Amino acid sequence: MKILKKKRFLLVLFILCIGILFYNHNWLGKLIYPIKYKDEIQEISSDYNINPLFIAAIIRVESNYKPDLISSKNAMGLMQIMPDTAKWITEVKRSSHLNMETLMDVRVNIDLGTWYLNALYVEFKPYLQDKPTKDQISLLSAAYNAGPGNVKRWLDKEIWDGKYNSVEQIPFGETRHYIARILYYYEKYEAIYKD
Image (tube, rainbow, N blue to C red; front, side, top):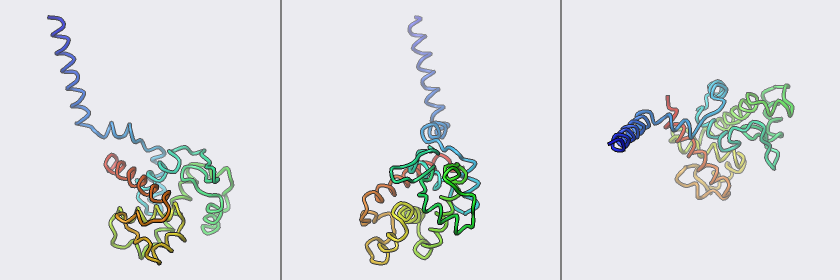
C-alpha cells in the first residue's frame, strides 16, 4: 500500500514538473541559452539601432561571453575585434581612449563591435533594403567574418547574391559555418527572449 502511494506521489510530482516546464518553457531556454551582459548589449545596440539579439548571437559565436578571450589571430574580447580594426574604428569615431586594456573592457568591446556592425549595415544598405531578416543577418555576418571587401567582391561578381538560401555559394567554408551558427543562436534567442 505504501509503495502504491509513493508511486502515485512520484507520478503526480513528475506530471507537475512537466507541466511547469511546458507552462514556462522560457525558463529552461534561458538556462540553456543564457545571455550575459544583457544591459550593456541592450543599451549599446539601441545607440546604433542594431537588434540586441543579433549582437548577443555574435558574442556567443565569437567568444561564448568570455571577455578576456584572445584568439590565435589576436582578435580580442567578447566580439573578437582585431586591434587594427579597433584602431580604425576609434580614428573614425575620433575616440582616443582606446588601448589594449580598454579593448578588453566589456562595454568598450561591445561598443566597437556594434559600431562596426552599424557601419557594415550602412555600407551594404543597398543590398539589404527590403530583404528578410535572415538575409540581412547572413550578409552582415559574412561581412563581419570575412571582411566587407570579400563580401562586396562576391556580390559584384555574382559569386553570392547575399541571401541566406544561397550561402553555399560563399567560397569560404568558415564564413558559411559562421553564418549558420549566428542564425542558429539568433533564432534561439528570438524564441526565448522576444519580450
